[in-house]
Amino acid sequence: MLGCKEISGLHAKKCKILLVEKQNTKYYLLAYATKDACEMQYNMLSLLRLRGVKVPKVVQRTDDEVLVDYVEGKTLYEELSQGPVFKVTLLAQALAKILTGFVAAIPDKRIGNVDLRSYIVKGTSLVAMDFDCVLTGTLAEEVADAVCSVLSEKDVPESRKAPFVKAMVQACGVNREELAKALPEVSALLREAGKLKLTDQQILGLI
Image (cartoon, rainbow, N blue to C red; front, side):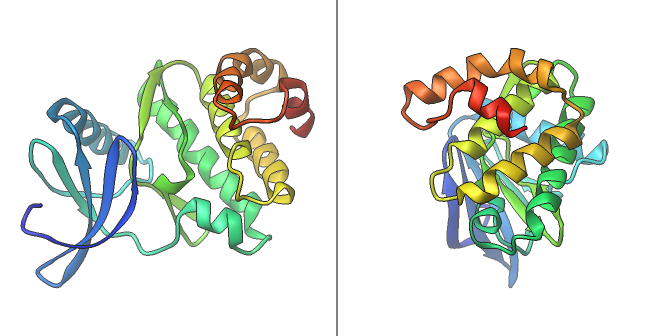
């Protein structure tokens, strides 16, 4: 683990995000299952940082691990679930900034499977730690994915989900017609998995 001592794990999907310590300094270690996945994420983090998207600075890397700067703060999931209500709109706008920044930096690609646990809240801005899934697509499709991901979070209060997704969509500059076209493919998959209860019409009614 690049000479690091593990302190705790943030979450694990395609990438394990571990809080580690090296020479008395905290870092996050991103551990990947394959060399290709690690290479892709390293290149992506480097490019996005260069283009002004808030991602951590890469400190060191191997074939399957990337060591990045430690970012103090709770995850977006924790803040949206339990944090101050006044932050909901600000956090939605912060996520929108990352979503639009990603598409602008890497044309024809979008973030898929938007995971609220992969974003660290720093004040009223966000730092994206990892992109669990990158797909070919448009900003509207990316926003639809993010909307469905938020609405699928069972432990986030319903009273916070609606204002969050509405503010996020508005900040991304995606209109209802664009969202309506992009929603079906993403929402159908989540409904089949039993994670999303709302129909597309109900979702659009929140925006």
